[in-house]
Length: 196
Length: 196
Image 1 (cartoon, chains in turn green, yellow):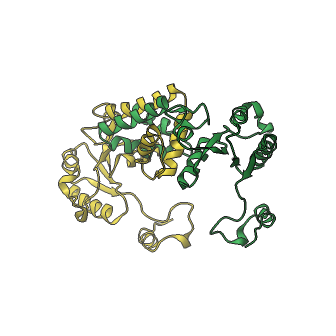
Image 2 (spheres, rainbow over the protein chains, first blue to last red):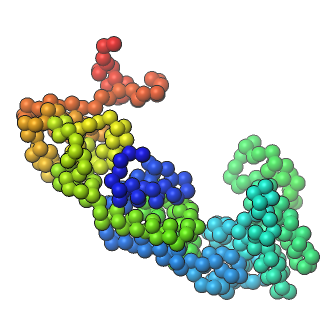
């Protein structure tokens, strides 16, 4: 690293902590900050501190929130619960604007090799929510091996409660060419084919 | 944009002001910040505010500095001046660790179409520095049309002072294949060919 003056070096080091940001990108960001007005920089700094201090985890669903329970838990249809791995998955689904139910954020997936067991996820909290009011649980964990195993485990547990469990459809991505689909995806698409 | 909760939305908007950062990347950065400890986030916010308040422009060379004149101006060989467009060009050259002279940051290039004239650059400050002590001025503006025109203009002015003016060599990039060099670069490489 070159001999940046101290305040610039400190700022570059901070930006370099962000995911996917190397020193060159961090330098570009730092120079942009120096181009901003003092008021803009103050607003940026306040946004950082405020986000950290104001954003909590919802005690019901585990999603990020500034109220407890979160706005989704308190305002939406509590009879359908969509189970996801992380808060960013909630954001991805919310971007659609189609889903009207609530969420349950596990905080990861079962991964014995990484030492992540049942007690490390918010599974007890999920089963605790399965009252008579719940009509369906949609499992939306990733399609990785761990995500699949976690989905299977949760589905088996929930069936004990007599509640309908569904999994997001897996198959060929919309707009992609069949020839480029990987073998597992193509095989899954055959298995899950539906009548037209 | 989806309905992020307010503190997250504010932070995403701030990150989205950085160059090349869209909403998805900004969201990724914001989630990373929420994963940091409060102390880390405070350090990040402080680095932003400190950089803005402590970093000034050197009154001699126009580079970013926290002292005036900057450390390069006060400690290095003042007989060679390298003229660059922006502070980030100084950083790029300093990364080499080879250049021992001082700099002069123009703050841009002559660009009549964008309304950038001679008085908008730190040209008077440059000519003011051309004392008997200066033996060479290296012009390191970009190789864009505007950078070339600015270099030509500065070279003509400096020759009036009887000082040697040089321009960084232009030719085929090291490690690149000849067949991929663009025509202007290849033509320039022929013109500037040197005896072996």
